[in-house]
Structures are given as structure tokens and as C-alpha cells.
Amino acid sequence: MILAQSDALLVIDVQNDFLPGGALNVPGGRNVIAPINRMIAIFPHVIVTQDWHTPDHSSFATRHPGKAPFDTVAMPYGPQILWPDHCVQGTPGADLAPGLDARRAGLLIRKGHAPEVDSYSAFLEADRTTRTGLAGYLRERGIARLFLCGLATDFCVLWSALDARADGFAVVLVEDAVAGIDRDGSVGRALAIMEEAGVSRIASGAITGSPDPGSP
Image (cartoon, rainbow, N blue to C red):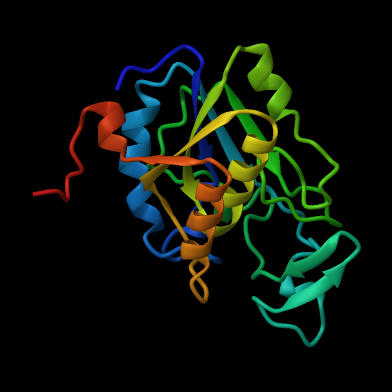
């Protein structure tokens, strides 16, 4: 596949707390790093996002007495899934995975740093009004198509894909460079929602010319 100058790779939340041993382990999360690194090496534009929560973030179950991780509570902006404390600012869990080669990233977006509102999407916080500035950054650089990879398929990748489509960008999900939490079939639902929104899918090898090491 020949990439254009209007193509960008969006690498979502490949951080220690989402990997094995982390506070919110995404099954298979470590497997996304190798294909992402191969793509980073060839994309003309690379953007990386990072969950960056305050220690008292309202999305943490520990802030809601009697509640447990994955319970849902009502917030001013709507239903909120509660999470284990994760990706707290300045902690090792919030660091980008040490195997991720992010040196070519032209932009790092830290999201979820407002304690009163969660932020899955790279474009909009969960209040659906506070923007990160990513859409403007992409437009100023003439970027028209985004290739999405990272963690987790059924939350931050999904919300980023939908908001990118709503902002008028073409979106491609790199299916072997994402992994999901997958509670009660949430990955399958996320893939169906993205497909309905016009998100296409591709394997990383079709972009890099490198076969999946697990392929025969």
C-alpha cells in the first residue's frame, strides 16, 4: 500500500497500565506494539495519545463509595463506567509502553486530565463539548485519512474513530494493531458500530509490506 502525505497514524493509549501487570490490563495489549512500530516507521504523520488522569479522577471506582470497577454511575454528562485507578499523571502506569517507538510522533495528546470528566476520544472529552484540538491540527496539515491503532478497541479506539468520522476524516482501523477489553461482547459491538459509521479495516501487513509474524 502506498501512503499519501494526507495519511496519518493515530496511536491510542499504548501505556503500561493497559498491558499485562497494569492496573487495567487489556488482553493481548502487548501484541499491538510490534505492528504499530512497523507502521510508525513509514507513516508521514504520527500522533500518539496518552490517558493522563488526576489521582482523584471521577471515573475511578475508588471515588465512589460502595461501587466497584465496571459499575456504572450517572454523571452530569451521562452514564459513566467506573474504572480501576489507572494512568495517573506522573506514575509509571501512565508512561507509554517502553517497547513503543514514539520518537517520530509529531503530536502527543494527553486526555482525561480534567478530574470531573472522562475522555475516551482523541477528539472530544466525554462531555461531548470539550475538544482536544486534534481536528484542527489534522486539518492544518492537510491530513484527510486516519489509520487507528492501539488500546482499547471497544472504548478509546471506538470513540476516536466515531469522532474522526463525525469531523469528516476517512478512518481505517488496523485490525491486528488493536486489542479490546471485551466485556460481554463489547469488541464485537464496537466493530459493528465502526463499520456502520464508515470505518474500514485493514491488516498492518497491507500497509508495511510485512506479513504478520504469526501467519503461516
